[in-house]
Image 1: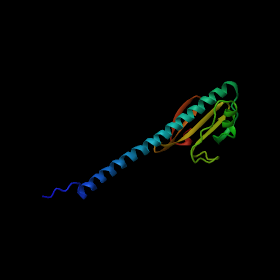
Image 2: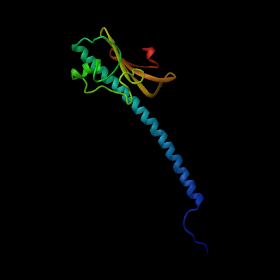
Image 3: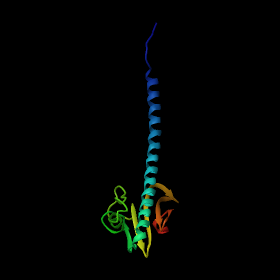
Amino acid sequence: MNNKKGFTLIELLVVIAIIGILATVVMVALSSARGKAKDSAVQSDVRNMMSAVELYLNDNELPIHTKQTLNDSTGLGKELIDEGLVNKVPIRHGQTSNDTADGYWYMSKSGEYVICGKYFVKKVGSSVGWFCATNGSTGEYSTEQGL
């Protein structure tokens, strides 16, 4: 009699293949969830900055600013920090100090303002979109030109 215990090589390879397929599916799902979480953070950041600007406007006039990157050291970001309305200004990972095409930016004139953050993965139309706040309301745009 041949009473060998254990698994055959084929059985082991099948189990390893199934585990590999399951791991791939999980990794793809996590990657998608990570992108959606970053996009939600962009929305939250823009809404928080909008709230801070609305509070700022209760006591101050908003100075005129041409389109600028949102940062801690100049312009609107510095003014909001100096007033104690925010602790820090949102910065997109990898955003350079003058990069308004891929991150957070703002513009203001005559008491009106626009604050925008670029989504990481969410599409608006056929391209990655922007989430913007302007004078107390928010919306999604497919390009900066649509603002």
